[in-house]
Image: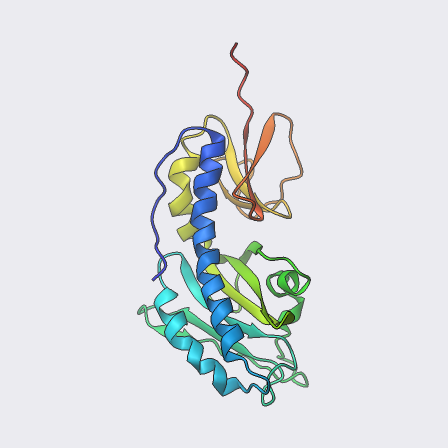
Length: 235
């Protein structure tokens, strides 16, 4: 099960960024396990039933930070299901429940997942994609983040391994270390969207477009940075 814990408070902004990066890297590590398993399972003539073999891997990873997880196929990959989500999420009882959506392109309710950044990013070659926060009307109706990685077979893109993280859980995990920084401190994704914050000036979901006196600290090379006030130099 994915671990959900508050981070211990380190000292400097760079240390905070590294601690947050470690937490997020933990989710990406889980996704790499899913990625590798999906690449093994998908053979030369795959069908949707083949992906049931992923479920024993997916179910234990639900809980803690991860509220949903699965494999999303590149359109046309599966012979019997040109569009397919092998996606499971945590129910109110804590049990895994399958997400079912209309995968018929002729339907008015058709769900074209290829337009979403969490799919388009890995498809375009990004090794780590972090999308959100956004209101996840498809799965949870909650403010969420989606983390995703590409799945390749023999170098060919075949889909995405992804996980949903509820923002409220993420904030519980990172807020203690962010509050240990003097002045405003907040996390932004690669597009400048605020993910978690200690200041009402830049709330989660808003877009940061730059401000004097703030320094960006990368979180372990992931698509996430910590913005914190630049402390005056003391000789």
